[in-house]
Length: 284
Image (cartoon, rainbow, N blue to C red; front, side):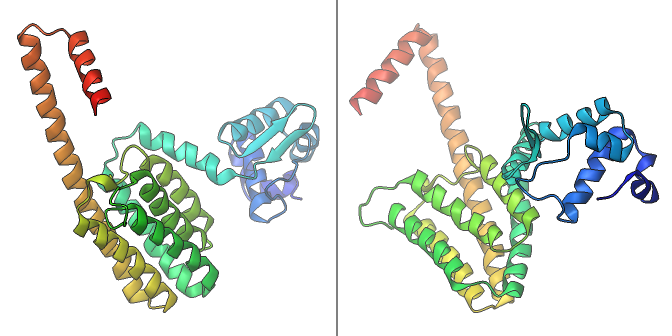
């Protein structure tokens, strides 16, 4: 393990002592001397090794715990979080929630990540079993969309299958950064940019299912050019669908608002309108 002298050689002491502790832990992770689930040295051991006061070591560890990198159990010290992908996802989700990020922005990032994932997949010569998982998600989308034999759309099942398809694509890329971002964007996807499958036409549903099939087909053939083209076409098509769906939804909401205002002008109270809407829902 690196000592204070080694860190000084790397220029680590140009930053404050709290950052020294953090950089030391990051370095151990990079060198795979600290892995998921491993217990960290005690605060006293880190203080002695790095020449950093124990209270500042504690501040650094608490900071890393705050972003989800570490877990702590009273009396047992700190452990490197086994599921840091999800902790990072929460941080990214929070960042996106307070920023002015559009649906188009999110899709552009997802496209860029998946283009890189495709390149890595073909380079790594992915096993057939991984593609079987993705093909199963395609069947779920087909069965639960407007294409299904039941005639009833299960939008949630389609959304989950769609998410799992793209999550699997990121996982088998073998790139942790791509995987972590995909998990984060999938969380943000819910309730904000999720395609409303029940509002898709039969033709749009067919196109989406076929696009996913083409991605897998060309990946299995290790045809990078056509794989990338299929991913690109998929995201451009989805962006267009989302724009159409949400614009229609906004117009519908605006029309409902006009109707409510008109009812209020005629003397209807908000409570009376709400009660009437509940009656209609029960009747349906």
